[in-house]
Length: 135
Image (cartoon, rainbow, N blue to C red; front, side):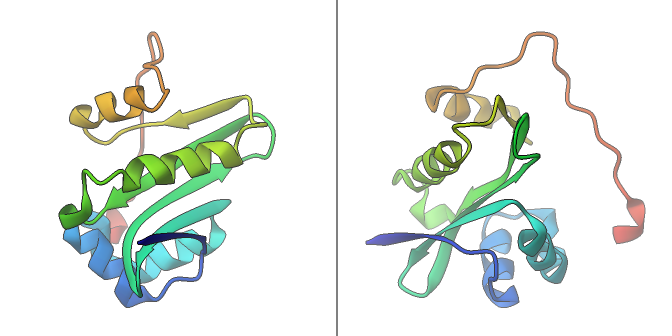
């Protein structure tokens, strides 16, 4: 049975294992990820016993906009509804916020978000600046 917890203070090794399992670049910086979670507005985790199997985090201003980031589930447990449940829980946390935004890193993930109530914004294009000193 999967247990869902609102928890920001996660062991670095558990973070590293989760992010490595999905091949995310950020797994190289698990200490920075842990710090990011501690400073995030919301973090919801999924646990199978003492194993971290999924996570989603949110950043918000408390009124106008919330951004959902880092939604991931270990590969061997994908397709079991864990990601949808994490997403449902964080969206519920933001039910008083005007806009809840997600920017999927990969186009293939768009249908998942659409299935869960999100819509592609007309004429929207995500932009970013990457700090190359993290290499």
